[in-house]
Length: 236
Image 1 (cartoon, helix red, strand yellow):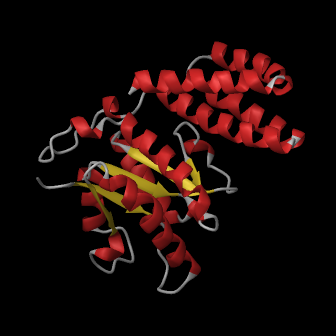
Image 2 (cartoon, one colour):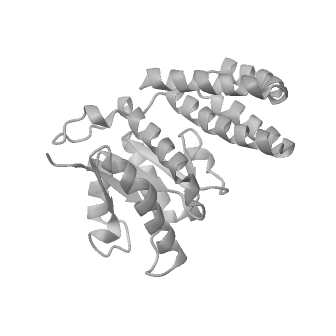
Image 3 (spheres, one colour):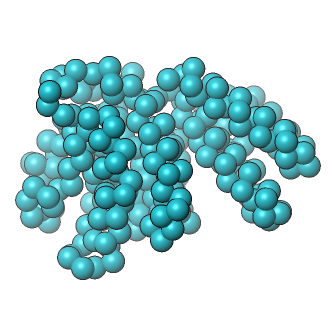
């Protein structure tokens, strides 16, 4: 059986630069281990040919590969061009970014996975989020010989995207509750409410009402996370 392909878009840089080392680390420790479990071969443009601009080969990957993972770190213009091209096709696309960098507003509707490369103790959590996002596309139901079809149906639903994003924020809130960081808790609570907006405006209002109460009662936060986990499982 021929494996399907995942095209990895990222700033590449020259050999031995920090940019190249970052991309290599993401590829080695996060993308390849996860994609192998889905029978996906990860391809980066420099591994096939020396490419300094968006050429025919890159466009073919963007149009035909079963999955594209795009690293938005550094806001590289070529990366954003390729990201926009793939997104316009409505094909499976997962954005990732270095933790702490601002997610562009036009990408905020998609679940963007934050990662760090200076603390590999966190790699299991990062790989788990990546696995969840790939599962949402149900790539396993596609034949290895079938070509992706341009269809909005191949994107996870707005509700699914929102639930995954809310789950990420709940994980962050749980960690901050342990650290008792009230200022960051308030900021992330606001982000949770914003991520709920794509589902329904009522959901956003509910989150804005409930989150201050959950800050006073951390046990309720854990219960909410259990509920979102169960809903995500049913969505998949």
